[in-house]
Image (cartoon, rainbow, N blue to C red; front, side):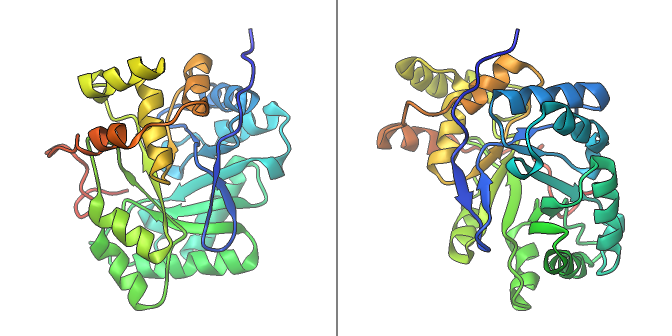
Length: 280
């Protein structure tokens, strides 16, 4: 049985004027038919932003789900990413052609450098390649993912500013240095795994207490926190009911004290992926 749709996600305006829905459906690690069903379900519920990547090996399934949904292409914002072998001015075009072919699309709304891979030292060239795609109309917006402050600095030195930086960010993983820099430079902050990893964060008594007060789920509280900070977020779920919950964020607001409680949950995490040494 299909679920009734919910109000669409609010949008955030990128520096070039493109409107991006703040809540996206994350699709890792779904593949094939699971990805296709999840995307079609999410679009039926009301999602209008789908997040995928070359590395997820599911762009074909995502594209199938987009077509199966019947939602007009121009109403769906599609984000994807490319890997380190394409870091180069000309190679990025080849990467984008692969993304488009697998998705079955003729343009991408947001294309991201997935990881900086600083050991290669070619992410500046890769971003210059992205700008050429933007100028050619193959993409509507460009950005990066998992870039730290010192990865962004060489871009800024050349007058290059991403529209989006997608990073690990949730109440347990605050990124104050990046949050401040993004605000200063007009970069939209987007969170991957915005509900944490392995579910431990959603059982935190501070979060469950706020959820109980509002009659909402812990996940909805965390996503509402993301929205009120102005972040975009890409929660993953293949379950239609959970997808609906993750999008159904209107009708309640966290007050100043509740936001402060969530802001104060940051903690060290030795297992947090480090973009200086990890990447693909």
